[in-house]
Every structure is written in structure tokens, then in C-alpha cells.
Image (cartoon, rainbow over all chains, first blue to last red; front, side, top):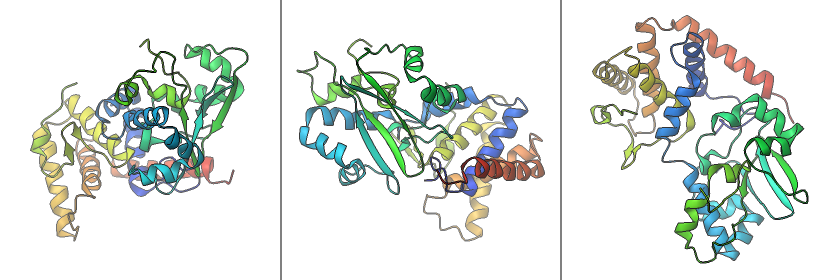
Amino acid sequence: MTESSHRAPLSDVQLRVRALESLLTEKGVVNRETLDGIVDHYENKVGPHIGAAIVARAWTDPEFKARLLEDASATLAEQGYTGIEGSHMVVVENTDAIHNLVVCTLCSCYPWPVLGLPPNWYKSTPYRAKAVRDPRGLLREFGLELPEETAVRVWDSNAEIRYLVLPKRPEGTENMSEAELQEIVTRDSMVGTGQATLEQ
Amino acid sequence: MQTPDLDSLPGIPLDEDGPVFREPWQAQAFALVLKLHEQGLFTWAEWAERLNRAISAARAAGDPNLGNTYYHHWLAALEGIAADKRLVTSEALARRRDEVQEEHQRLHGHSH
């Protein structure tokens, strides 16, 4: 999959779709936000629910979590998750000490096999720039105020590696089932621009 | 959002939730068609006819019809209908394709 690959050239079909989208946008026939909206609406097969299932499993199954953090690509492949072939996936864990944030400073590399298509803001220049320059300020814009003692670690995606954040399991969820936990894992919490919370 | 009649498009990959995409570009091509249709640039029947023609042409040219090329035909039909409706000329499209490629290589062609 070259969509999220820096070095690999774009495939013929990717180029043609981008060319069409670019010309039609330029002419004002379509606009990117509406297109993204439609894509969001229909992108239900590949989507954040896959990532959410992985996170909920990791929260409830310590052995799975250990293997996931050790070698996410192999662990997910052996669990039958598809689409991650050919790229290295790394899962980074949020703790009280460290908050992880994922960005792609060059374009819009994104772990789409587990999160679906990237949201508009992820592809925007301000996000890409600010994630590196002022991650804490960026998180504040997303409504996330981290304690001083939590360090922010920024992961820049590239052709070889895609990152998925394993959010902290919120307090008060001890009695929740894996299925219930899945519901509270948001896309943003797996990109690092949000946290999994009980108040949603 | 109104979903047009997808059943009128034989062979479209669907599951109980709706269309299934193997790669992001397919969802993008899908979204473009929906949007152009929504804006009244063509009727859904027109699109279905156009798509069927693209599929037939590909079969005649030896496409094995295994289902994995569906969105290739979708894209070819979309380019065709966009040209017919004078939204983009095929020359402009080819030029832009090269520009997109150059831009991509300029940004990402290096090692980092």
C-alpha cells in the first residue's frame, strides 16, 4: 500500500484519483471537506473500530499487550488483521509518564488498516507543523491538558513505520467487558490527540 | 446523506454495512462519483450505464473479472463521464497526473 509510503511512487490509480480530485476542487465543482465527509460516512469497513478492538484487547489481556508492544506487525498478522502487510507497525503505550502523539510531517502517512482514512486535520499543514514545534500547545487545541510531569513524545510516521497509540485505560473501567471498553476508544485517542475517557 | 441505489451497480463490493473498499483511493473515487451525482451533474442511471460500459470494455480486453479490479473500472468510468460532461478534459487530467507525480517525488523521493 503506497498511500502512506514516502519513498514508494504513487500507483497509477492513486495518481489519477488525485488528479481528478485536484482539478475538480480547483474548479469548485467539489470541495475537499465534503469529499472527506462522504469518505468518512462510507468508510465503515476499515475504520477506527478495528484499532479500538485491538486496544480493548490489550487492556484486558496482558499477554496480548506484551506481544503487541514487542512486535505489533507480527502479533496483528497472526490475529488475522489484514492490510498491515509490507509495513512495520509499532504500538506505543501512553502512561502517566509519557503521552504519545502521532504525526506525519511530510504528508499524511497513517495506520489506515487499523484506523481507516485519516481525518482532515491530520493531513493539514498546521497540524503537521505544530505537532513538532509545540505538541503540548497542539494537544491543548484538541482540549487535552496534560499534567506537567507527563512528557509528550512525538512519532513521525514514515514509509517503513506506522504508529498506533495505546491509550491509557481510564479509571473506573475495571468492571467493563472488552466489548464495552471498545466503545470508549476513540480514533483521536489512538492518534494521541485525545484520551479514552468515560465521559463522551 | 442519501445513498444512491447501489444495487443498480452489479458487482459492487458490498457487505451488510455498505460498500467495501480495499484501499483508500477506492473510497476517494467512490466519494467523487457520489458528490458529482449529488450536484446533479449526472443521473444515477447514467452512471450505472457508464460503469457497465467500462466493465464490459475491460472484460473484452481480457480483464478476468475477479472483483479486485472493480474500482479500476469505476475510475475509468469516472474519468470518462467527467470528460463527457466537460468538467475536465483528458489532456488537463493527464497533465495534472504528471504534476501530482512530480510533486510527490519532490516531497518524498528522498531518503529520510
